[in-house]
Length: 172
Length: 136
Image (cartoon, rainbow over all chains, first blue to last red; front, side, top):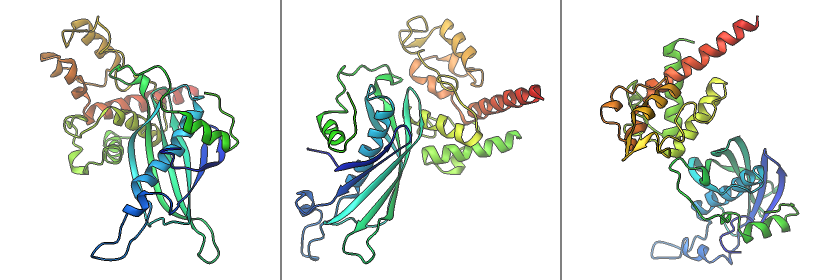
């Protein structure tokens, strides 16, 4: 499941809201490079903020795609805001909640909240660590009239498997 | 709502959507050339205007569509007189007087100034006000 940055969809209100979780694992190779031990100090394995943003893009992208029955090629076109307050390390769980603000034939806008659960913290609970707002484009309807391949290369097998294993019925 | 009030609200939308300084949002600033707007920003601006002013904007109502692809309207990279007339009719809030001197299609987005957006909003609010008055 390459390049899937969410592990499971845990809630879906079609056309309104989608919630997904991601378990950060020390087995993920990039954590060994981000950041390795060097002359300045010990290793600090944390999930790169750019991949947290990608996790939200997938969460919100599925929400937008689902709203259009996966007929459109939904492409992340703009990150209006991305604030991430703290690092997510191995053994922690991220929870992404994406809300659909507006959708029309050309694209959609979403707002999103990132929460983190540190399973070792007392009174374990999700706490908000970030806010990410995005715009998605339905690229077949781009203003320049550029044509793209007919098959939906955005919602590929990886997304189908994710939705199936999350118990969400989606035919596309 | 006065024109100044609309301008301030439009300015807020543009600062938010385009991450520009308030001082850069002058009446004659062009959304693309001066404020750096790209195609997805136009959709963002439409969504944010709807939210700020509480009205719906139909596709193609504020910014044009299907003009660049229509051979009747564009020939050899330039907007034809017929195309210009169509644009003027569809987009009465924009000022085409500078564009018509050198109507290259690649420059058509330059007619969208902050003032054009304010004109558009004023018109929408006027229409909504008239409809509400008619309902009484």
